[in-house]
Amino acid sequence: MDREKISGIAHALHPVKSPFDDDSVRRLLEHGVPRADARILDLGCGTGEWLLRALDTHPRLRAEGVDVSGSALRQAADAADRRGVRERLVLHHQEAERFGSPHRFDLVLNVGASHAFGGLLATLAAARAHLAPGGRVLIGESYWEAEPTPEAVEMLGEFTDLATTLDRVTADGWTPVHGHISTRAERDAYEWACWGSLASWALDHPEDPDSAKALETAALRRSEWLRVYRDSWGFVGLVLRRTTG
Image 1 (cartoon, rainbow, N blue to C red):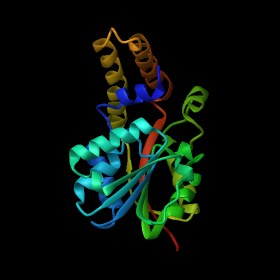
Image 2 (image 1 turned 180 degrees about the vertical axis):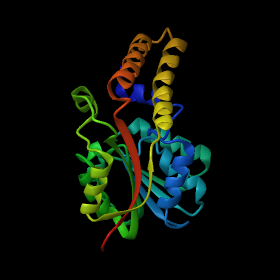
Image 3 (image 1 turned 90 degrees about the vertical axis):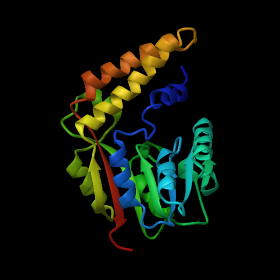
C-alpha cells in the first residue's frame, strides 16, 4: 500500500501530523510568529496545516511551504482555497534541502521532518540560511523520555534525552524562548487517531484492494507503539532565536 495513501488516511483526524493538541499548536505559533505581517516558511510542510493555522490567525501574514509530495501540496492548496487564504500561500514542490528564496523569513518551521536534512542540527543550519534578522525557528523533534530498547532505536532513530537535545541546540548558537513537551495524553491521542483512522477506513472500504493491507498495517503500528516505544519516546516543540547575530 502506498505510503502517502497510508499517511493521508492515518492523519485525517490529526492534520498537524505531530503529537500536539490544538491548544499546544496555537501557543507554539503564538510564540513563533513575531508580528502580524510576518513572512513564514515551512521546510517539509506536508499538507500545510501549520501554515494554514497561522494564516487563519493573521490576515496580513504571508506563508510559503516546501515539500516533495505533490499530492500533499495539492491538499494544502485545496484547503487554502476553502479557508480563503490561498492568495497568501506559495507552495514549492521540491526537496526542502534544495530550496532557495530571494526572501528571508521571520519564522522558519520544521516539525517532525528533521530527517529530510539528516538530523536536528543540520535542520537548524538549513533554517538559519532562510532566517531574517531577529527571526525565529519553530522545530518539533523527537527525544528519548526513558531508556529505549534497541528495537525502539532501530525503529525511530538515534535520539538523545531531552536535556542533551537542548544542550546541543544551545551549543549550536540558539536560545529557546518557548517550548512545549508533548504530554503522554497528547502522544496517546496522536497514536490512537492515526491507527484508529486507518483501521476505520479499512473496515469502511472492504471492497478496496488496499483494505486488508491497511487493517494489517494499523494493527502492526498499534502494536509497535504499545510494545516498543510508548514508554520511551518523547516529542518537544521549541521556538528558538539566534543567541548572537
